[in-house]
Amino acid sequence: MTMYEFQMNDSFIVDKPEGDRMCAFPAAASFQVDNGGRSHTRLFVFYSQTKDDAHVPPSVGVRISDDLGRTWPVYQSHEWFPISLVQLAGGAIGGPSFVTEMIGGDISNEQRVRWVQSADGGETWTTTAGKLVAPEPMKCIVAGSGRGGFAFTWVMDMGSGVLGAALYGYFAADTKYRTVWAQSTDGGIHWNIVSTIAYDPEVGPEGYCEPAVARTSDGSLLCVMRIGSNKPLYQSRSADDGLTWSVPERLPGQEEEHTHSVLPALRLLPDGMLVLSYGRPNTRLLLSADGTGERWTSFAENFQGTTTGYTGIAVTGERQFLLTGDNGANWHFDFSRGFPNPNPFSIWGRLVDIVGHNGD
Picture 1 (cartoon, rainbow, N blue to C red):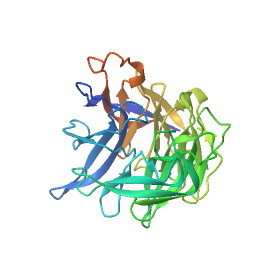
Picture 2 (cartoon, one colour; picture 1 turned 90 degrees about the horizontal axis):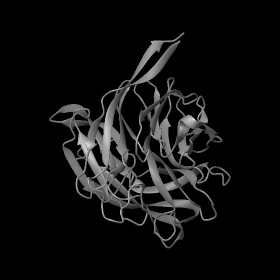
Picture 3 (cartoon, one colour; picture 1 turned 90 degrees about the vertical axis):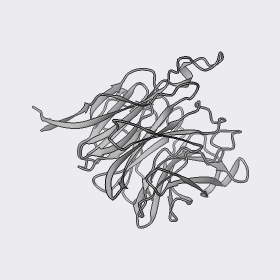
Picture 4 (tube, rainbow, N blue to C red; picture 1 turned 30 degrees about the vertical axis):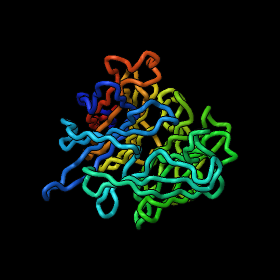
């Protein structure tokens, strides 16, 4: 029987800001881009540059690497934050900004959406205003902030001109978070909520939230969700492209304390393995060797220290990926006397290989 483990390469700095610029809550993506007629892998790491405060306007930093993370020469700053990106049929890269805004008051069936897109491999970006329509009234995800009822965390190309997305938030009568599935047929501008992935007012301190979704090796959709800080992750599965979902369960194959986390990242590798990263405490990895998510193995901790626990995964090879995380969390520091000096925040990355060996 073949056993698998994560082989961690040396870590490197993606961004180490100076002055009073922050960086935390990273996400990552990789795409094939053309440069002078040659195709290569371009890595993106994007992260928040503000405190964890819904009343502070979003600001995202973006770092780009064309040499598998050895250097990160490109830095951009934007007023949007897509937690995941997708490559469209025509080659453009796009994603919905995490933050949405209610239309028509704190209770409404509609919210504004910003679709972020690049036609030149991330060199420049445009935003297009759109909206999401819910089957019943939503309430503001953070009371008094004006933010929409549901926040985007994951987007994927479903084929045939359809995009799918996982969001979390509230219908008006909800007492805890609800995770839902939405679809767009016009390239990410307009969205409709088509199903509830998970909702249970008795589960966890927060309810099902912060979802990540991947197409598994058997063709189903797997959604992994948070229920609270330092609480176990749950997963749900759809065999009909998001129209219906199974009853959520804790991650199979792992002890509960190994699965405590906030927003996970989930990627299917080219050779069919499924990788899950997550954190709080620390940052951690799990593997589904057959790519189904029916059983999780190869538990590994890869960063121990002060961190938000948020991570990102970008595919770089058949059994290789970029893992990124952060060092520092704003709630660990006293800002009453000004910004901490020296700046304690950074974004790190490391390439991870999956290696196999014969077990007993």
